Length: 188
Image (cartoon, rainbow, N blue to C red; front, side, top):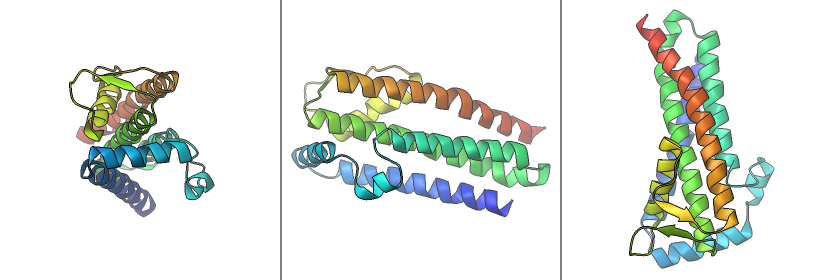
């Protein structure tokens, strides 16, 4: 149980730190500075450390987060006894929620970088979109599987949206179903 609890806590902490740091950095700079940084990041591609870790694209991070949440949920389901589930189930739920937020923010960054590099998204607002508008787009796709905040206007944007919809569907269907089963099992 100690290994499972420590794994849950470590993953949840890492996911929460990623979401917090990403939001803080990309919400406090001026839009012009952020667009320049995002454009350079898009053109540069993955860092050496990211490539070393096997994270060669923006989609690698949310796929890894989803896989981690699935592993945690399965471990709690298979190895958790009635005594340990009282501790492990809330940790698994927190890990899943944090990994879901990681998926949202990873794709928000992907969309923002694409838009900054000229692969535009059309928003139904009169101002230039901010990073938080891309978070809203990613949030609606992750929650509802549909894009309502913006429309991609390039093949690269459309491909990113398709990938996100597929990943969100799998995440919501499999991982959340396991977690609901775990939570329901606590009551019995």
